[in-house]
Length: 322
Image (cartoon, rainbow, N blue to C red; front, side):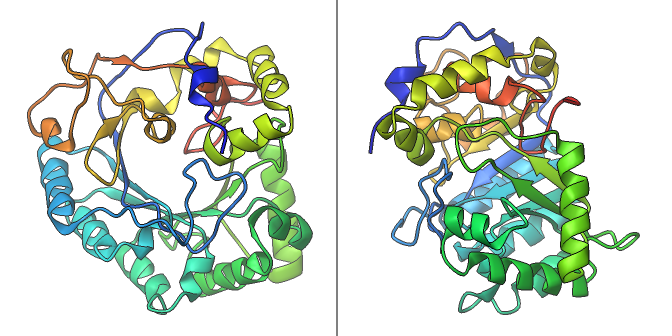
């Protein structure tokens, strides 16, 4: 695999500073039942990295102490971590919004037969990957049979109330382009998804998030192999919009990896660029019990153009109207 960090570190991206901590995003492990082309985590069935019980306890202690609005649980397939449910339920008991970044097919893995019911009972928001409403495009990006399983999972979630008005159960879908291109207008694409999924499968959902593919790890390596890395970076830089800097996700978020190390965002985590806290080169989640992160400088590199190009891109979708 081609390393992309050396291609990204020399940057003219504008400086950023952190506001109040609103979201703690916790990656509980890189194991996944899928291996998707666009995955910036390089997740897959053979990954073994996994957050342990003691660290999950520490994360819950930090949530009690810092009181962010949201716990955003990610992976891999985060549900494969044996402590996922305890972490999610513990955060809900503290009154936090909890997001599960779900790949949908996990609902049909052995041992996960009651996962959908658990998520609904806890009132956990689901952000689910579905890169297209077409079988051919989804299976090409994510593997044979993924589309049909994803549709079945969405229908199961709808039956539990997800995506339906006044249910309190939010279901959001995530779109990624198939290759080195910016995503289309999020509002227009959401209308297309709603029309097609309702007409063909009776599926309803609340939001569509259109995300740009980040030029790192598996996707970045593919770009390098095809000679498309530099043209894609040029596209992102041409499309840079300064207005996106005001709402880029890293200003209100801290990312935690499976070892407890802190990063400014999930992408920096995957690049091995740790959060710098009070001059120290590396910080740990236990530091959040006492340290002040507000106002600190955020580490930037050229991949940050992926979040600020065009309509912008974040864990919550577009930042601006296209």
